[in-house]
Length: 488
Image (tube, rainbow, N blue to C red):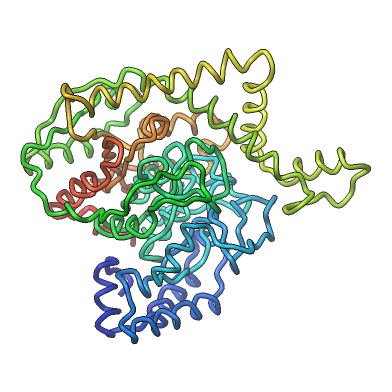
């Protein structure tokens, strides 16, 4: 039962072949037996209470496609009843009095919360090694990272500890762990999913999205997650849509842009081989490959690591030990309490980004760094529009690798922050432009020390083109079985 897709699980629940309580218990037992450190907080009583409510809806013919479906929530979304820590000591025992909009939307749809999954502290990281509660292990190889910051979400789905999970993407944190763990994940257009109740890292970049086994599953989850929220000032007013409406459309005539900047120095040979094979499969499905250029790609790393830390330094200023969060036990006065509480509560990577962000926003450096980065961000977005939009558009979607390498070994990049930052080279530009992007499994590469590790194919579309991305991904998954492969 744990190997079924959301669509298949929903059919089992609707036919009353299994109850929501039985299904939740199955996954809770799998979580209890796991040693991946994917889950930070599980409460069997709370989960089974939701499952019983879902069973009542199913019995009363008041059920939707997600009623009774178990789901895990990234520990960046606040949840009533479950702890919300953002992977940080700063929020070690915090329990929110309200649910994030995303969590509330799934509750209204009748989904059942399995618990909260591990993540890099305040979503800052590429390997899930920055969590105060220890790293998540990649289920394909427990000596490897699962990717970050949504590594707990991706690992939980890959190991079949949950059929689906929520995640967030600031610079690639849905796509990159999905790639490294061999699952499907999509970051929708910025503003499509409410950020209310999502603990902020970089407000102009953070975006929620789903991770699941298949593109079809991701579409079902997006149907529930998206929608206007007046409590989020960045939320877009758009009518609800069915993201799976085009799943079975033919790919005949589809133009796939292949950026030369995604296939240069730094891309591992095993990753390139898997991605090139996937592109060849799309040609068999009727698509045409078009060589394009995204010339500002290499600038995405310096631009991102100016803008994101700047916004982080502002957003994290609220964690001062006064209203909630960690407070130092011993201090002399208010200023001393601030300093000690923040020094004790934040981890090294978070402190590093706060310092960088405060520096680039300081008097005398704002124009030289932050303002300049915002101007280049506009140029990066324009590169995508030159390829995807207008009468002279070159392609319908863009494809390439998600990560330059397969998952690296735990501890390999711990002492080299820049090496971690470079792992996001192919995902950052999409986030800076606010475009939708997704990762689908497309093969395996060879780990440095141990067996095979998954490779993901990145698919990028124009604004609000999620339905097309899901159609493209679904057609590939109908022709291949990479998404069905499971870790031992």
